[in-house]
Every structure is written in C-alpha cells, then in structure tokens.
Image 1: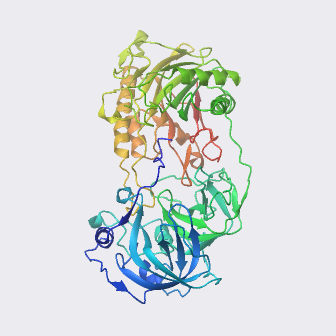
Image 2: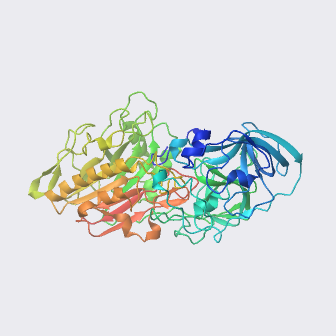
Image 3: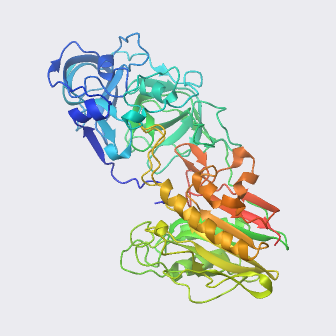
Length: 614
C-alpha cells in the first residue's frame, strides 16, 4: 500500500447519535425529538443544510420511487420524490439503509417509515461529511414498474467554479450548519443532490480504474487540463470542481467494471443516485454506465544522458520484496532501462526487507536488491551496485514487518560511490571539510539526524557521496511522512485539516539544515535532494526545503500543466520531487509518466529524472 494514501481496509463508519447529529455536527444546540413525523417528504428530511433537520426523528410513510438498489457493501436503496419542491438547496432523494439485501426494485413506488440519521463514512474522526439516511425501515410497495423521476444533469454549466464556503471558526471550521448555496459552491451543489438520481454525458477520465472498481471523470473539459488528459491540482485554493467518482450498482460478478486510463472518455450516458462515501466523497453509483473509449495513452520514455551528463532519478517501487511475482520485478526493471534510460544514480523508495511484510524481525534487504538488480541486468541495463542502511525493526513506518527503506543504485561504469563506513540506523552522518576545501560526509552512506523526533515512525533520509568525472556529488534520498490522517477535499471542515503536514514540515527543516551545512562548507557543492516527499510543490514542506535558497524544486522548471507525479481522486499532483543546490544551475528535468495515469500499474508513482553536468 503506498504510504501517501490512507490504507483502504474495511471502512470504519459511524451512525451519528441523535445528540451529535442535531448538536455538534449541525453546530446547533437544538435537541432532536424522537417522536414520529407524519406527512414528511424527502426534501423535508434532507433540508437546506448538510445535516437533516429531522435527524433522530421517526418518519412515517415517506413516499417516493426507487431509483437504485445496492445489494453489496452498505446494503439498501435510494428513493426519490417525483414531486420536487421549489428550493434548489433541498435534495429530492435519500438513501434507505436496510442492512440486508433490499426486496424492492427500481421503479417501485414505496412508502418508507424509519429513523432519520446522519452516517459518517470513516467515522467522526475522519472529518468526512455525513450522509443523510433512513435506517430501521418499514417499507410498503405501492406499485411497480413506474417511470423514474427525471434525472438532474450534472455538467460544466451546472457546477459552480467556486469550490466551498469557508467554515465558521466558532463552529470548529465546519460548514455543516451553513445554508447550502448550490448556485455558488460546487460542494454545496453536490450536497444539494445527495441521494438524487443524476446524469452525466460523455466525460473525460481523469483518474484511472483502480483495484476497487471505480474511476474518476470530470464534467469540465477545460478545467486545469494536463497535456495527457488529467486535471492538475496546482494549489490549495484552486480546486477541480468538475471531478466525480464513478462506481456501478451492479455487482462485479454480474458485470465487470470497465478498465480506463487517464485521458480516455466515458462515452454516452452515466446515470444513478449521487452517493457520498469514505474513499472519494461524491460518487455516482451508476445504474447505467457509459462505455469507455480508449484514447491511446502511451507510457513516456526519457532521453539517454550524454557522456558528460550525470543522470539521477528517483522511483517509489511500492513495497517491493522477494515474494512479489517475478513479473513485477521484470516490469520495474524494464521501466528503469527503457523508460528511465538507465540513470547513473537511482534512489529507490519502498524497498522492503527480505521477507516482506512478515513481521519476523528481519531487516536486511539484500535478497530484494539482488533480485531487482538482476532483473535490470536481464532487461539490458547496467550491473548496478547498491548502498543503503538497514532500519531498526518496525521503526520506519510503512507496512508492518516490511521495514521499507531508501536505497541507492548506481552504475559503477559511470559513477563511483565514496564509502565512509560506520553508518547505521541510529548514527547520524555529518559534514566536514575534506580535501581542497570540498565538503565531505563523515559517514557514506549515512542517515541524517535519525534521533530527531521528526523521523519517529518514518523513514530517515539516506545521504550518500558520489564522484562523477572527478567531482563530488551529494545525493539525499527521502521518503517523508505519509498523508495518512489528513481529511479529504470533501471534508465538512473547509479548508480540510491536514494534520500530517506538521511532521513533514519538521522533516523538511532537518534536511534543509543539513544541505545548508554542505553549502556552508563548500558553496560549489552539487547537492540533490530527492524522493517521495509526499507533498506538493506549493506546500509548506517544499517551502521549508528551499528556505534560504538552499534548494530549488526542479519540477518548477516544467510548464505548470506538466507538474505532477501522482494521480489521486482525479487530481494530477506532485508528490515525488528532485531539488537542486545553487551550484546546479543548468539541468534537464523530466517527470516520466508511466504509472499514475494507468489502470495497469507497476507502482502508483511516476519516476523523476534530472540530468546535469557537474
């Protein structure tokens, strides 16, 4: 599991208690009544805020037409009132949680009695918005085979360009109690359609089909478009409002989900109830699913470095260990040789120990690296050597028992490694003045400040000193703390809480201080800081890395629309980076798109490569 994404285990969820739904979530002191409410319509249940005004109340014989039935996962059905009110903020559809396979069918006219509640996918600590629902239902089928209410068409014209209102600080930065303004804010617009049958037309795929049978599209073709068909996430304040997740209501055993890459087109009509879930927020649970039209997206290859250029790359190989199938090793090796053109130095992230996720105390990774370097040679690449530091058991985060770490591969025919022994998991390397006034590391390979609390349960930076054509080059391989625990972009907190940034900021400050030590010792030093930074080029993390002019984020040398290495929830974004010291004034940088935009992936990250003349 990539460390930059919250692990997708069984969803933790909570049905909000009456007090929480009516008070804390809504930002109100009103208490919900448990008395039964008769003559209620669905729009009365949904109300004009994110929290139902009837949360905790019993409702009786609410009328509507069944628009979707879910027989797996959170079992239940959606139904919708064909007699809409004149308030665009109140949804006409709602989910009925049955807990077991529903006995109703699409087109049934029903009367539903039950308890109105607010269900938070992921639980209250997730920050997710809640889903209004009716639970413990009693359902009466009045008739069958009825025409469905006309779906709401979601399009570039209907979705506002502004993303969300700002939460009320007095209410914990939550937007739950704010009246919905669907004409102004995209999140309010989607919330006003929660549970409603919606339709989109032909739309571009911006997030490839994932292992959970879902993909992402945009209904806004021009919104922050990348040259390869994605949508760029370029700042905290400029959201991609046209993104929607697509799932299907039919079980996969009955109907396989289509495979799509970024830039493909979901052609025709996709229609179904608009849901809200833990792993993507607003989602069309498609009763009718469009057809994927392949647009022929190709994997990129970078150019070969010239004789006088040093090529340095970084690649997160996603929990590689000897138990992985040979096909994974071969595919990753082919990417190194064919797509990355066999870089002189390759920093790897997420190399696991020799028995993978078995939690046996093994921390060595020699077998993993032998298997990988052999696969590279078999693919026509160089006979790479490697250097690394074994971590302490279960001290560096990642998959329990896996002991992921950074590793340097280098081509000894092109570059040499300056070995200064003594480095281990606990001992810090330092900077001293070496021959001819050049900076030197006391330990190479060595770890940077491993006792710093910033690295607790996280990967410690690996520093190495290399020599290329007689000139020293310092490379620092990183895998900063994951984004796990951050709230989603669709959180009821706006802006969302990003708790993980605190640790990465501290990590960036530690690396920045080390780089400054090198530059202070020798202003001519060629230093490269690279790896899975787990943060954006506009983030506080990157700003801390570059503080005082110590480093420059090479991704900023690319046109803005090409600055990404990862795709998450339909957003093409930067996580992997290479940063350069001031002495490296002229370089060629490439984000090589071979994984993140594709349904078939060897890793979920795209590798980066930088070429320069030391």
